[in-house]
Length: 481
Image 1 (tube, rainbow, N blue to C red):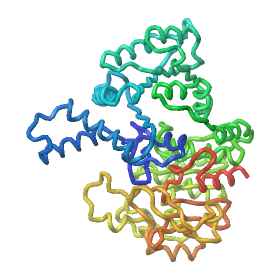
Image 2: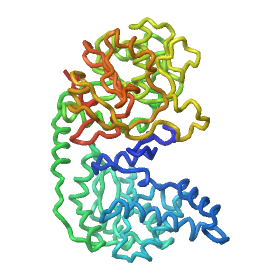
Image 3: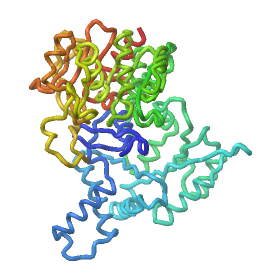
């Protein structure tokens, strides 16, 4: 998934590379999902083709219906069984009528027929736009999309209407009448200044009651107090800090959505609002004077990435942070580039680099994992998913994590070269987090600096409202002090 086209690639504990929506589900539900929770067309086709090759279909003509739809149903039900839950929430992405989503819609239509109307409920999320000329909420797009759904055999039980403002009574009544949905099941989901208010808004609309009633389930007491407290902290925060985010996908903020959310989580706990100043890394390379772009920032963050474009600009930003005592957080590639900068300018290793960027560098302080060197196919071969990291006592990392062993998620191929570890340590650089066998460096920090830390893993993937990722909390706390 290209970040420019698709936004961030989210990583699960078991190493699944998944759509960024799954990150939102984890943050809101506070649960760790798996790769099995992401059912894609590619995965389904692959399984069906493999079954046909093995002879599972006994010479049948393999078709979209029933073979593809049967596999979709099987994967949904398998998630239900393995998760041991009462209800499975399935999002079918896209727009009604999309070629890509048609087999999935057909599959869930069949599920309702097979499992019974009391065991399958359809919730349709739709847009209710407002024409600036007349200022009226227009229900025609909703009517049309429901018509398309009904044409393929799906009648929505609940319609959630996205709109700039709360749905008017007249609009609700019209949608109810023309979409054949009870008026109390037409739910208003207006725009909000804070995405974490959405569940609170939907609770006031009693959407949960409508769904539970359709599934003939008994309503239990809902406790959203933790979320309410988190939202209140965000609303009450008055202090604002500016974080310079130096990257190469800055034109699409969704490329770094988990990082942005982790900064919000940390800001709420510290008691401040975090404002992002996007800095295109290549700007710093084109003209050294553009380093001025960093001067107003209380903190500098360099996130993940691949490839050579913009890397020298990121290294200049890391150098500025170190020399001017500005809090710095480097994530994955951001940690590696901080190590390159330190190697060049503190250790005196001229030309130090990552072999990803310069295969002929005289000082490969960042190098590919030994087990990766024989791999020729790049797809899906990275170090992916949650791995343990051992935290050294007496370090800033230990102060933030407050435990000696943590599990964090990875997505990379290159590592700190162990041949240079002693040289780094001679110059007071601490590797405060390592793999349990001390072979891989997980966290780097520089004592004496206000805050200069980098992690080989992605702490943002496990950050939650009310439970900020420790490294993000420390970074924002330092920037706000």
